Amino acid sequence: MTHGTNAMLVGVRRGDPATVPGAFWRRRDSRLLAAVAGAFTLAQLLLVRPGLGLGWDETVYVSQVGAQAPASYFSAPRARGISLLVAPIASWSTSTELLRVYLALLSGLGLYLALRVWRGLFRTRVLALAGALFASLWVTLYYGPTAMPNLWVALGALITVGCFLRARTDRLDRRALWGVAAGATLMAWMRPTDAVWVTLPLLALVAADRLWRPALALLGGLAAGAGEWVIEAYVSYGGLGRRLSDGSDIQGGLGLYFAVDDQLRSLGGRGLCRPCSGPLPHPAVMAWWFVLPLLAVVGLVIAVRARRTGPTLVPLACAATAAVPYLFMIGYAAPRFLLPAYALLAIPVADALVHLVTGPNGRWRPVAAAVVALGLAGHLAVQYAVLERTVDRTGADRRVWARTADELHRLGIRPPCLLTGHEALPVAYYTGCSSAATSGPNANSTEADILRTARRIPTATLVRPGGTPPPYAHDWKARRSPGPDLRLAPPPADGGHR
Image (cartoon, rainbow, N blue to C red; front, side, top):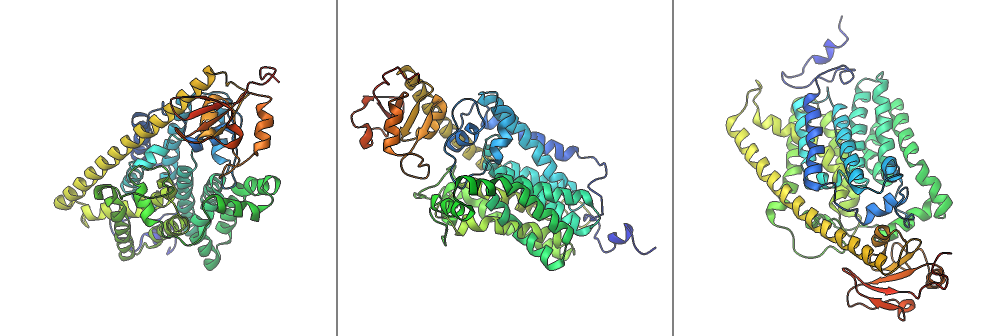
């Protein structure tokens, strides 16, 4: 018999993985991958800590389903996937600690499943190293337990690309097709535009090779995930074109930009680099960013020589298209934007590192292993240092928001209430109020509407320390707070209970 499972092993070098139909779905020892995922969860709980308050964007997403405050203004670029993901906790509990633990556990499980789909395409130790490399980045650890969508796009990308490669190899593997659909749904559920960029190479492949069943799974997943976002565009934003246009305006106008240097500046722990100015971080902080693509190229060369180009080239192509809009199409940066690219690059990079430290017979190369181990140790030290600074800085900012909310409560600003002005959106969440803005990306009201509301419920405006209040609040009573200056509207005539 010339065909079958054994025929697929011909030409595979000893020590290289064989892509065997159904290999993933057989029961195998996955304890190494589970250990990596478990360590990822534990590191989140120990290093990021469950007590870290919610950030600006988190308050927007959580407020859509939470019980602590009214829903914040939901701007055009946002999608509701992360709000639905946190709903099982946020819909009945206001505990940030419980939400963080839930997300840490869920992200660890997500990493485990995302790595498992690649079994049979790469050796388990390569996948474990890839998971460890991705999970140990400060940006991955920081956003693992946060109510933000980018990590989930990254995990969805790993699932989609891995299952697509399986379905391309074995066109009868229905579970792989379901995996393609599930991964694409997850990505589009979280960030529809990111999902399209990640899957561009896959869409090109299904068109070139006429892979109709993977194409149906991929397009069906994208449609299922983005369906709500598209429907909402017509219901609330004036149509899909208008929503895309508004989203572009909020992001500063999509076009041709060179944002590579902005991304480099954000590597030092800046959650949002907008405007992105100032010096670059220390070279040690940026070194891994330049080594990453070099190792990815090494991984591709290794794959070409071993005649297993597809499993390496496809994730590299998807990583490249995922990164394009954030490197060359927006005029600012946030490190979380590139998480899908980092996740997809991790597997070829890990393959390259394993190849460099082992010989053809599978034995360790002591000198190469020592050099790689030393480099990884330095890399981990840098990532930990950046993470620690980032957690300390953002934690301090959020404690100021909480103390400002306490001061507002002391001054009589209690739900139902309204906040406007500087950082009103996150402080409103902490206070339990609604928020309003007359300009900027979160503009959702007018001065006349704010004044009418102030006659009904307690209202305050937050002003930068030493800044000038908006015209409608010039005559409001001034008060100090641990953060911004406060301007309190005259109390409603009936005490604000209407």
